[in-house]
Structures are given as structure tokens and as C-alpha cells.
Image (cartoon, rainbow, N blue to C red; front, side, top):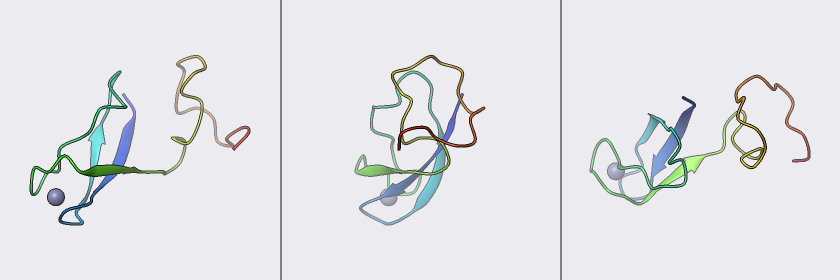
Length: 64
Ligand SMILES: [Zn+2]
């Protein structure tokens, strides 16, 4: 499963969450349990959600 970084908009905490097939669902903050979290665009999470599912192997993102 891909590991994503999230930031809480309420308390500002940053944490990592394992996201499976529900990657568009909101993630609960680990500290204040707010659902107002946003995913921090890190290495390979900006695109490729609609192509095939071999994730994490591409170093250079295409078409970003
Ligand atoms: Zn929080």
C-alpha cells in the first residue's frame, strides 16, 4: 500500500497514513481526530491515479 503524508488543517499536525483503495477518502488526524486533512503532494502522488496500478516504481512523473 502506498504511504502518503497528510497535514491537518485544524491543528497543523503532519502524519503519514497508509492508503489503500480508498485514497480519495478523508483521513482522520492522529492528534485531534479532525477530518479536515489534506494530502501533502510528495514523491509520486500527483498523477497516475487512472492508469495501471503498479505504483511506486516510477522516479520521474510523466506529464505533471
Ligand atoms: Zn489535527
